[in-house]
Image (cartoon, rainbow over all chains, first blue to last red; front, side, top):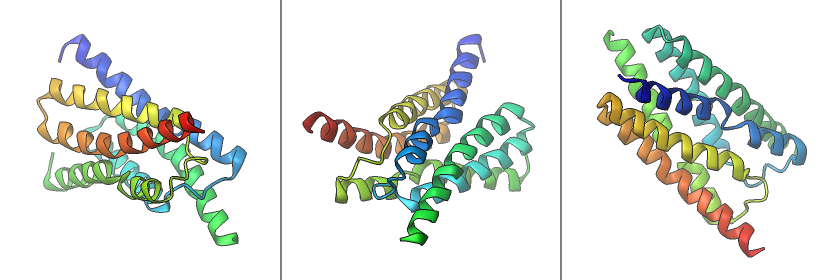
Length: 88
Length: 88
């Protein structure tokens, strides 16, 4: 693995970590969850838990960290979807 | 890496691949993109391209495949968001 590969891996990890930051801000502000798929957010959060577990197996602190940050934002969105659908 | 680690990695990869299948079906059906964040889908698609590139560096067919499938579904959603916002 050369330096270019390392950089690509880090940039990819950063994208994974922050991907749902804009979506969580939008969903917190608008509370508009009609267009959001509950199934996709359940699968996403489950996937992040599995990637964190895989990071534990690989002893990869980066993998655990990037996916934990991503899970944090996705879980906010998932919580709002469930809260709004339960209420309505 | 034992067999449990391998299985966790595959399950995580499958989650990544199919995560936006339900969201793309919902968005195709309803065309309701008001609650969707353009920024998040741009970051997601960029991240998937980087993960595919990282898979090329690691010579990991699985990494390329799972992320390419994920990119396919996310790109559909991104396309609909851009098409609807441009039109309105």
